[in-house]
Length: 621
Image (cartoon, rainbow, N blue to C red; front, top):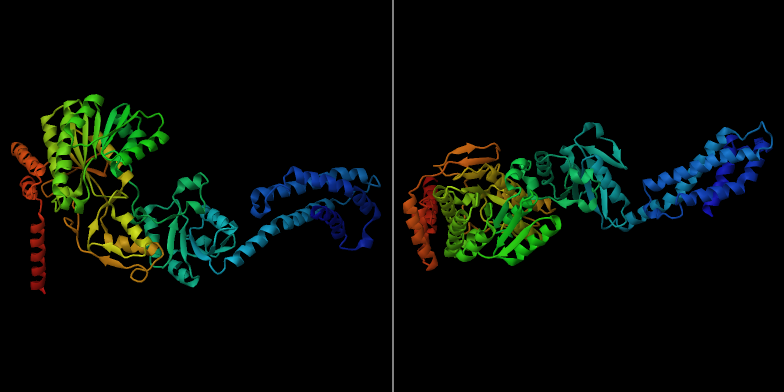
């Protein structure tokens, strides 16, 4: 009914406007054909509207497509008027004025737009009124395409309680301009000022193309506000049209590292993994499972996943079945400590390449159970390495840790012994290239401090930090694993590959930034509690020992430490004595470890050093 009235009004208003609203001035020969044509015009226009689904759309969610259909339908109605009104002319030489047709289309579009889009407008006003009391004030950083999409979705959503107050962008040409009615108020130097001025609750960083270094700078400013900060995943989502509010994510620690993801030469990885049988021990763990994911993408002949924990092994098995259905995959449960089981695996499958990731890695837990660390890490590695060499394995890559350098804990010391085993095996077995890859803390790995911080923040605190001065090197799991794979391609035998972890990060800074960027105030909303260094923990980790040199590879992120010379015959004897001590649960196990790794500092040695440091500090005061 509204559309019929709109067609009638558009028809008469057009001729009325043409003659400046003077009814008496409208010639009869113009008014009469319009009137006679009106019933046909109504039927024709309604049919066109029906064909363009103007009676099928949910106008509460009307957008560009509905507007486009509306305009085209009204224009076609105008074209129909141009053609059919010729049949209703009274005098051959007296056509309806051409301005009539343009005015008719204009008025019809106006009437139809008001009817269709007024519902959406009124609904938006109602939504804003209902959510005024519990709305979230939002600042958008970035005035590009991603910001436009996010703003459009937030404004048009019936369910969102977000209210966008301002936009920040460093492009001076955009300052003072508007995106969908929201003003670009200035550059990043305005973030703190505008957060307070507009009482902002949440900051959304809508710059998916921004490099990590720029993102870190923006986060450094945003962390000085009390706002929660969220961001978009990356350019991939923008290119594929996946940018929306649901894709927004909380700030991750990777964003705070301020460096770009490590790049590797994928070609070199494919060259030595493709078509090979690959075994990953500890394949269900955080590092092992990522190794399996990346190896699966490089077309191995067969992937063997070996793990003691069946739940993790099952999870990665199901994941790879979905992502790589063509993959020839074997999942085996067993322990690297079981000599017969390890030998059976190698004799049955004859892997060409082995990634040895199976290990006990949790420092404080291993301090309480040192013999388990030795039995699993040291002798699990020895048994696996021997089985590999005796069954034709070409490359054996052992995952080590920066904690192996001047170790202050039994886990780090056990890994240093593992490195020595690898170097010894490389000299003993000429047909297998044995190498170790050493790197620091991995973000998101089992036992990582970051998930702990997040749980503590979600619980309302306190966030526990062992020491205000503690620093660590960080790398993401995919980065570390990619470099491990490439290091395997560089393997010539006996090397200890050392991954460049970038700049060290102070854990206290990490905790404070995570609290602030989660929308809380440090010390007021969430407390930070210092608990003291845990058993075996040190303030900083080292990637090299003093005796080791540093040699570069083709990838600047991967370096080779010069092997440290040691008496191999003595080492074998010491290993035998260490094995007996570990299996007998000797309380003196650390003494046996100290004999093999002279740089290892036992707990009592660390305590003595700390006391000496305190005394020195007092005397200096």
